Image (cartoon, rainbow over all chains, first blue to last red; front, side):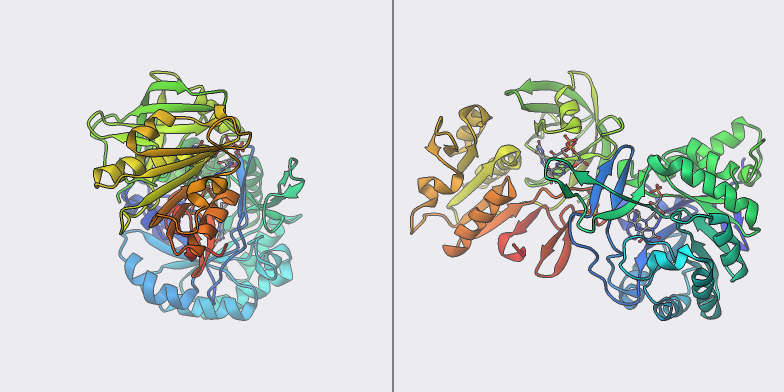
Amino acid sequence: MVDLKIDLNGLELKNPVMTASGTFGYGEEFMDFFDISRLGGVMVKGTTLEHREGNAYPRMAETPQGMLNAVGLQNKGVHYFAEHIYPRIKDYGTHMFVNVSGSKIEDYIKTAEVVNDLEHIPGIELNISCPNVKEGGMAFGTSCPSAVAVVEAVRKVYKKHLMVKLSPNVTNIAEIGAAVEGAGADSISLINTLLGMAIDAKTRKPILSTITGGLSGPAVKPIALRMVWQVAQAVKVPIVGMGGIMNTTDAIEFMLAGASAIQVGTANFIDPCVTDKIVVGLEQYCQENGFSKVSDLIGAMEV
Amino acid sequence: MKKYIDDFKVIKNERLNYEYVILTLQHPGQMPEMMPGQFVEVRVDNGPNTFLRRPISIHDVDMEANTMKLLVQEIGDGTRLMGQLKEGDNCNLVYPLGNSFSLPEKKRVLLVGGGCGIAPLLYMGRHLVANGIEPQFLLGARTQEGLIAMDAFSELGQLYTTTEDGSHGTKGFVIHHPVMRTQSPEIDQIYTCGPEAMMKVVAKYAKNHGIKCEVSLENHMACGFGACLCCVADTLDGHKCTCTDGPVFDSTYLKW
Ligand SMILES: Cc1cc2nc3c(=O)[nH]c(=O)nc-3n(C[C@H](O)[C@H](O)[C@H](O)COP(=O)(O)OP(=O)(O)OC[C@H]3O[C@@H](n4cnc5c(N)ncnc54)[C@H](O)[C@@H]3O)c2cc1C
Ligand SMILES: Cc1cc2nc3c(=O)[nH]c(=O)nc-3n(C[C@H](O)[C@H](O)[C@H](O)COP(=O)(O)O)c2cc1C
Ligand code: FES
């Protein structure tokens, strides 16, 4: 028996496999395909203080081994979430985390306060890295002072597990990682999408309504892996790695680079059962390679 | 409706012309029920340019044989690879997805299609016949060669055609056909699927004549089952997912 449990700075996950925000709905969309209580955690959609309609269609462009999205945080707002969605999802048998987004520090604080009162939500992921909203969003995550300001402000009002999600659209990600750790993050997740764009040569027009969007999928994996490794060197808090994870091998690579847990995003669209397969695959890998605990893989890259 | 993910077997790949094929896919066991207007998400090959699944309408269903048919127009890498599938190949589907066409309140029904948009109309036609309604079809193409699967449609009901070059049926677009020109049309309900420009004029015609009209949209999708919010249509109630709230919408509900 392999021990799959992960200690995320005091919060126990039954295994390291989580889903990434914006790619797994509220979990319900996947229930026909597998039992989502088998997951280590589910990160629900980006949630903001107010209702947001998101960006205009087209919001998606397929690119080589990846995709660009410009959804723009479409959601009904945190109050709607607390009233209508939370009661439905609170007993799913896995940790349901809320991805908190905003444009102003004030909004992040108010949203986090609402989620803090939801008993069965063990933590939030502070999204200071969304490339798809006009103001705020990613801007917070691209400089140390603004990242620190928003994390410190939320830390004051949010009493449970505070995960902070970093943007890869920066020059020195390790520096930002260290700064948000100092500001009170319990864990750090990365990467959010990379800013990219696509043009249709036939029509000579941009494909996305917003012109630029966020790149995800296998195309970003080497960059994500490098960033996870760099941040792992710079901080002590656990890291949740993501970016292009399609299968067990990818997940193991992120753990070897220093991630305590992983999130799977775009791959859910192609194989809705992929996260369940990774849970099984991790156990198999540990068995075959003589690891009694999956946590022994964390940072175990041999150089 | 419960969604599934299964490997189907290709049992037939019938080439209709230079750009269209009909794939017949065999379910590994007892195929679940599917409704007309619903679609499947096809796993292509995970090559560099065919990373995401491709949404394709359910063209026809045979519950006794546990098979379904897909009508595929080859317009890019993904659909071209589907066109090359051979007998015995596997084809992985997530299905059945989306809502479906509704049954009409009255009996006089016209189904209007163009391009690969004719695909869901065959299964809808079969469903109508099974419910005692004789459908009329109006199908348009650029040329005679583009008019495909005509026999299957004409078996189910009256078939009208238009071609842009006049090589078959009425010359022009579907909207130029006599059934859509009369000032007092004998139609209670229209179902349409095809290029957006075509659906818009059909929807406008329906509105002007007080005819109920359902349109089936082909928005670009990443997941096909409500997880990504990439496929939204602009509706009276704001953004709605084409893959779960659609692909079929009442035309007056869309902000067109
Ligand atoms: C609900 C629905 C039902 C459909 N039914 C059929 C059908 O029965 N038969 C058929 O031939 N086609 C159908 N289509 C269109 C079909 O999905 C596209 O032609 C196909 O995805 C193109 O892929 P490609 O790799 O060949 O082309 P490419 O242009 O190389 O594709 C690039 C990307 O754009 C997307 N894309 C391009 N064109 C379309 C389009 N028209 N609609 C949606 N996504 C597109 C692709 O999925 C891919 O992600 C349907 C689309 C939808 C949304
Ligand atoms: C359609 C889509 C929507 C997303 N929405 C969010 C979001 O609301 N909040 C967020 O923090 N990240 C969001 N992301 C980013 C993912 O959570 C993840 O960081 C990124 O996609 C990289 O992982 P992947 O390559 O496994 O997809 C979104 C990604 C996609 C593809
Ligand atoms: S395609 Fe993902 S929500 Fe519709």
